[in-house]
Length: 506
Image (cartoon, rainbow, N blue to C red; front, side, top):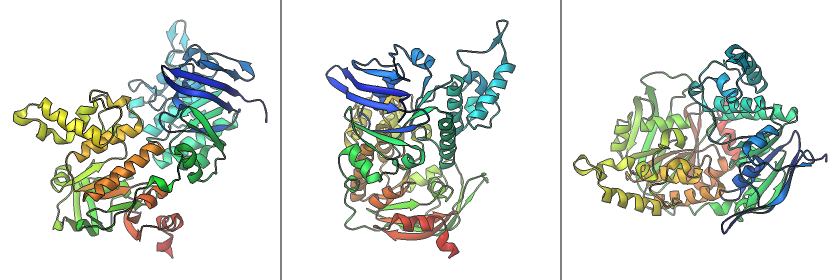
């Protein structure tokens, strides 16, 4: 192969007594998308910090286009054409797109900032990134997928030769993710080298040319992008994919939720919102029921309508909770019925990122810890301490800000918050989105333990292997309708077939 655009050799980094990197070799070629996989703590962030100039290695050599380089600051790496787009985008919501693209190197004429020229150049950069947006729009008005593409356009403004993308699709819809993938393909065609970090194994064959897996500060292997997920999981955690899933329930109890030809009528019609039109399913005590379906099938809408989250309306047809007719349609009604809910976007709607772990956890149990209208520090401490231990949140620091936790530990805080309310039925939307394989296994174990205690779980996931490995039954949705139901052991092919609606056509 041609000379690598970027090459790292025998890179080592130690933090006190912890060896974060232990002799790592890594290469990237021009026009290549190199996927980097690894659990939290594997060393990915430290390695990317060295490439982007934020971290200094203790030992090793780095070359850029064949020349030895050493970046003392991120500014040095940026000047060399290396741009990192972190998971937390470094955009200023209160400024428009053009101002964000040229922040720190504004275009001036005779000492005065030229907004007209900045808008013109911003339009060109957005076009190159495949973005059709008005440069005068405030970033705060953009969807997450649009913000991600604006961040890429910002990298183009810096004439990036190497682009590092850290979990770029963690908060994107399927359509937004595909748009991002197309933009990455265009950048590769122009010779830009891409380092793509992700926990979503299903993305690897869609975006990668080569895959490197790290574990415990070491590169444990390379793989082709079309390698089976089971092989990647084995490299990531040292055990097989099936070993991630605990045993299923031996028996189930009485029905907790029973929908029979149920239909939800929203109070206000919402464009692009697929209302549940004809839903029949049952969730029993101790049972984990999965919801499968393509984007737009109505899985998220079913869960949010049952909980009354971000939508109000009324149900028609038969809706029974614990054997009794339930008038769902609002969060208050759902909570009175013993229903808990975890959204698919923990960062925006599941947590208050700027608050502490403790304050996030007790949000659902304020009545218990506020006798006489004042917070009881003793009760709060007891509730939080129990939750941290029960859900193995790390670090076990109630005062830690949630924004500083890893994705897996943030999700554990969401679970702890919701389950302190003692629901009987738990609704989960993409519960393992944006968390590593090890954290997924821990979440699966916790869900099974909860089910064993009598909780019913209804879970929507876009990852079919997850549904197949975790659930006792899987219900398939298409166009707001439940079209099929299968016991454990169903194949991915069967689920895909029904998700596409092919069985309906046949």
